[in-house]
Amino acid sequence: MKLYQALTQVTLNAQMVDDLAGFQIKPILEKPLNFDPTDLYHYIDTTLKAGSRHDENNLLFVTDAIFITENFNFKGTVFEAYAQSFEERVTLAHQIVADLNRHVSVNIDLAKHEFQLVFVD
Image (tube, rainbow, N blue to C red):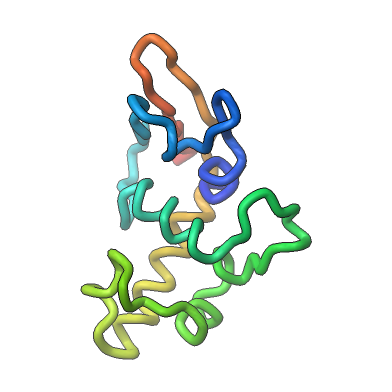
């Protein structure tokens, strides 16, 4: 699955990955992400409708950097500091798409209270 799917579809006790108190998201990867998984989760949370099927959501917010550049309001998000100019917004959008479309598998380690995102690098 892709990272955006892991962040929006994996639940434990009916709670989303980043909403479960006491659990941490732990990326296991060789090539680093551009952004922290929690920041990416909050980005997705602001752009996609929770509980919607993929055909009901505007997946351009996770697959199309130009669409993100033109339509995402960076103000008031953790990405605002990176997106002062148009060129910075374009670069940021490309980095978001690159991160969210990386392939992962998910392991839930109940003993360590971790959602382990195992990246296929």
